[in-house]
Length: 308
Image (cartoon, rainbow, N blue to C red; front, side, top):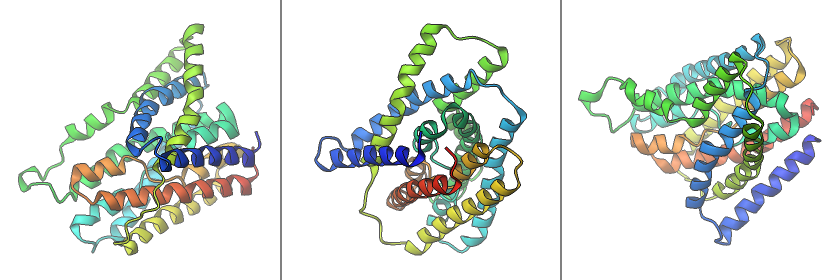
């Protein structure tokens, strides 16, 4: 399918989501319910459908390592940039420089543009991204939390493990990998059921992106907000360009990585901010801004690469 047409359709659905919120048909509270439905039903169905049937190759195993390596470099650089930031906000800004909203943002458009082939690559990249979000970002937020008492200064590994165990898409991905490696063929009824559920993923995901759009941005801390944006997109573009020039793989493989590296901050930044006592409004501002910026950057990257 033509990439520009896919983005036009996607933008139309996002606008519909924004309109139904503005006229009062749906509220952000409803969007959170829909997000839970996506994360626990339609997205796992899509992952299981795609990944249980693909041929796992060494090139696929490189993708989670790229996600981990890129985020480790960005986080190390961010420590230098925000070393003098107030402790109450330092953890928040560090936490939001890494991790991507892949499942609730990129999956539907990558599936529409590049089909199962593109989905194989982005799902494997998301495997590494899941560890970035639930280990790198969560641990960083925990370390600098203003709510941590002195006697709880040590990291509680059980809290991190709980986050990972609660991630249904991540659990389903591991199940799909096991099914794939064991050569298990799913019954026709199961594959048809997964197909029906996964088809609902794109529309629901794009609708909630529209529902969550908010132009009432927090006006304080703009200097640090801009730093976060420059770090995320600056490193994203540098890494993406290097990958396109130096990785000896097919164009779609490199293009998916490039797109993934310019995606928005994960929605988890908001509940993490609440849990650790950071300013939820700043986290929401960053999530909203990157959702808007990344949509058009993704459109630009795909158009410039000319791969469809």
